[in-house]
Length: 393
Image (cartoon, rainbow, N blue to C red; front, side, top):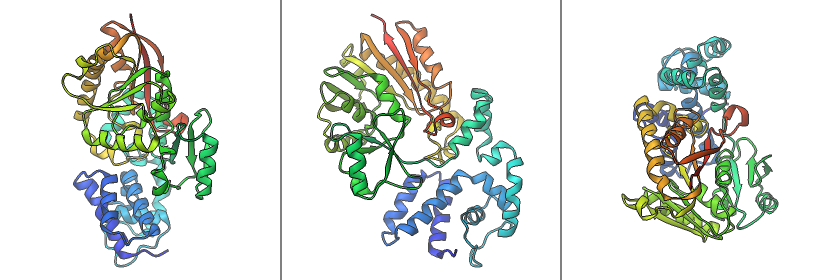
């Protein structure tokens, strides 16, 4: 197969901006697509596959090309994709034939090369997860399928499957998750269908969190770090819109997006609230149930955000650990005595998960009820952690 020069140069440009300017990959890709509306579906597919796989396999491709130059590792990825490397594509590295021959030696390379991760992250993974790290990082390097959550305020799972099929989108049930669907590998949910409010794009692992909160009709639920509201919307659906879900966040823009999503979803019980310094005091002992979906490293989401492993730094990890413990201590005051608190992260690191929970238990006043770690290696989902605790009366 032959490549189009403009698309090849655009791909390499995005890769360079991610590695050199530390741009967020999703944002860089979206900006490029917006600036070039004439690119067709196949053009966008070529660019998206190139940049995601180059960022995901940066060090492995560098080994194959015997070069760390962006043009060289892009060439190595195109060889993997079955493209001829044209004469006009200049780079410093091995030839395509030499790259193909070197592929057989990749499995014998150290884990940091074959799984394409920074040295510090490999050391951290071994220190925190031991022998399990090898399987977890291998799972996190696999491409993520698109999971959907059926909005039960608007339709059943069966009706959602029929509706999607009427738009030529084939979705399958996910065993063990009553509201979850998965699309075939490489398939996406068309943009027009995303605005209907009948389904939401939400990883299957994330869909395990709201049921752990176990919201009941008529209760007051607080989601303290709601962001754009994926879990808040799930809570509203589980309650059948009976009661109140306070979706709180420090980011007004995210809350604005949540309000738009809630309107589409018909989640009338949901109320957004911008968090300020007095919020914990204002809502003291208000919540029947409390969700703290805390800021974290995000290392459980590397399937979808492969650039994160190059952007995230050890110093940031120390900061998020501190924030997690602070939020548990501060926000837990909003929960009634006898109420249920769920602490969650999208990390697989025990230092962000059980260690944070233990910091709250050690202060007294809370009892651990249940833990729910979500292993990418065991499930194929993103990596998550959640723990349910009871606030002692």
